Length: 123
Image (cartoon, rainbow, N blue to C red; front, side):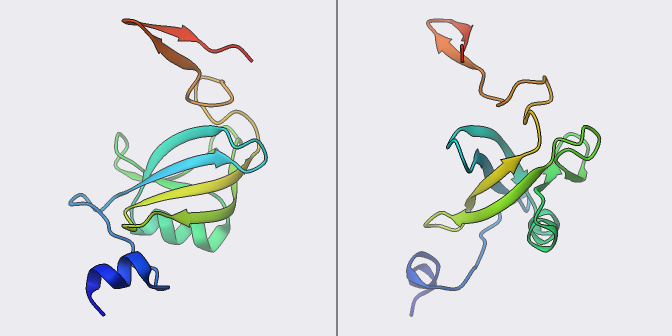
């Protein structure tokens, strides 16, 4: 079986990290289906997430592992991890314990592109 076939069709988890050792991870509210945030995971963040059931990421700005909600308490409890066909991106189905965005918004995606500007979304 070719490596591509193993990755795309096989049952083995073979995460494909980029040249900086990262995977894209999209956190989605498991109950509502709303995209909450996009972040990056390195091997340590992925392992810690799987071990604890709480979303951990690699902070590019801090250059370290961090657990979502470590200071705010707004953790993301992971219900399921979905893997894309190339195994280079993940969708985390989560149960949020508060707002996902550091701004206090439920989701980091609280505005839409409207022409050349941004318009806030309304609930």
